Image (cartoon, rainbow over all chains, first blue to last red; front, side, top):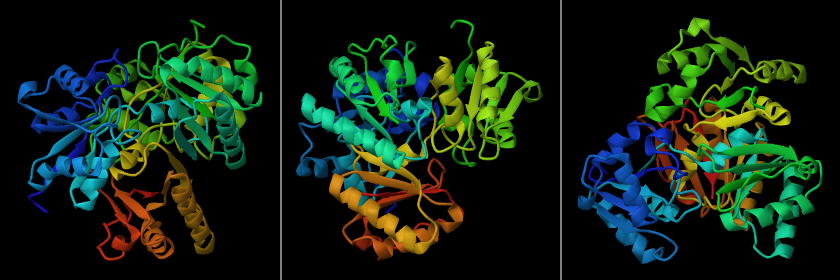
Length: 238
Length: 238
């Protein structure tokens, strides 16, 4: 296996308001400097990240291939992995934060495990873990559920199911929403959840104006909500 | 609220084989340099971490108070938060990795939210997220379950329950074990799980000798297992 490449999972910032080295260990740069092949969710934002990070090689000499919901078919993933089988290492970069969690990067990771290719994750900002750390909710047991259904009746059902699991199993329940729907989601959360249920609203994590707050739903109904319009947020029911 | 302190959640390395600045953003140091009050899971390891990190203040001038399973009573948490109410900021440091997740740090975070004290999580290594990134399993939906029961019959039941949830809901199921019991746990996982169920074994994450591998259980039964004796590991059923 000595002649196989290594797949490095390269986190990038979550917020446009931070520079790479505010949220990434300097040691990541040594890895990034050595790579010339990148499997990315979006080429434009990956190039911008590597450029801001000040990596050693000129960006124009690097090879980028996209892996996202438009390209993620089985045959394409095989082609992405082929250079690793030939001994070339690759870096995976997602749109924001850590790759492989809630993005198609997981497909190339899976293909590497099937081939015995080594997979090395580097440290970086995960809005899921940062929100959980700062929530004060149960970090001994928690679940990330991605997006809830969009239609209000189905979404109300999903919210009630998560609340039952949070109370019944003591398992904190995390979920996200498209930023432009955050306000509608919070409105429904405050309608549907019981007053004593605790709700964390974490907005713009790692940005200078980040707000992370946990309150019982009954108190959330009485206070001003954080500004969430078009800002990335994570929600936790505990 | 301008005269309240801020609670900073300060990650530290997971592995003794890495230095702090291999796995932490350099920007964390600026925060750590300003603090003189630390709420820690273990004073000895927190002092060692701050010393290795080369923070600006002499370690002997800092105040440390412990928050762990022995001290985590309600009244004690109130005492820990009192300095923050008086305008002094504090850093929370757990035994390893990010504080507030699977450790008693969550209690002081919760107390701060109740008082309107700002909570700021800093970036660092989370073995949960790093294992998930490198697993290739479903990062769109996953749950961390902490420790499974110790007794084999109850543990077999728990394993089957997690496998049902992994298959039925497509939710990857993470769990941990005390390092000296890793080998016994894996032995039982290979007995109890179905051959096609995927199992990730992630050992010594961030250390130079880290191994992270995902295989169907049927294949795990045929290959040599990674060396796990007394090494921290994370397991994922997908």
